[in-house]
Length: 127
Image (cartoon, rainbow, N blue to C red; front, side):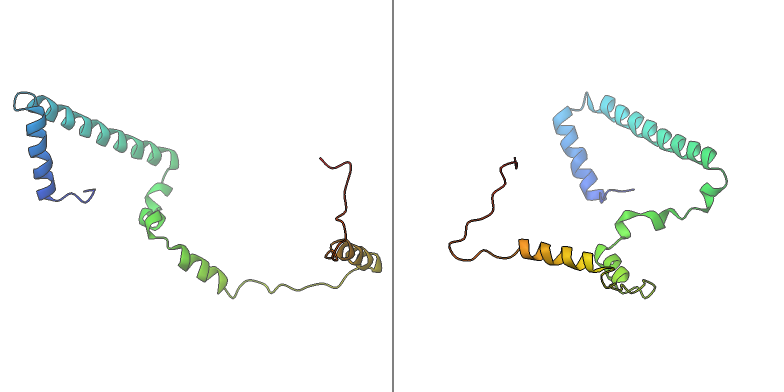
């Protein structure tokens, strides 16, 4: 894991550290940084070992690169889902009864556009 740091960038960071910290404090802070990196590496290895213990032999069978979120392209995922031939076709059913058709007609009547000069309906109990 290099975080995109080249040797040139590390050299510039080192020079800035020398100027900011001074030559007398630089060895102390370099050892602190080394100790921090070691402890982070030990914590990561400990977490990996604990996961291996809890998951058992299945842990070694997992392809971790396949689970990397950087490889996913949302456009490709949506395109593949839309072009998937395994999805069943959607069918529209006719109304089951005449009562259903009457309710739908009444609903459409209530949602009609107002004519010029007509007042909008008002509900006294509405909040």
